Length: 92
Image 1 (cartoon, rainbow, N blue to C red):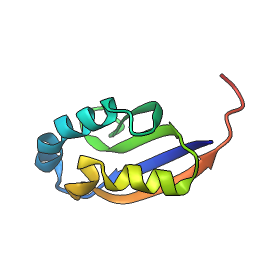
Image 2: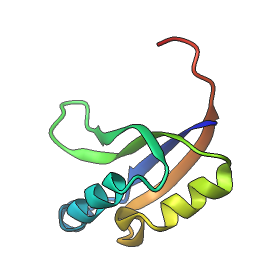
Image 3: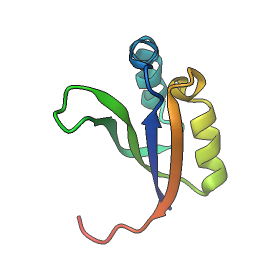
């Protein structure tokens, strides 16, 4: 099943994010679940990272929660909000 994970950063965490990002990238490379697509959410002018977006394939929401709890960005307290939604792909 596909899920979207939509994460918004806490205000003022730019330096913490820079420090944690290499661990986050390494974590995703280990493929704890199938990441179909992921990347940073950015400000409208593209100059500032404001969050993260993931499209993942997982068995259920519990698998997503385990994935999130082990993510270095989550553990560094970067995200203010994390929203998970099941997703039905129709085009593409």
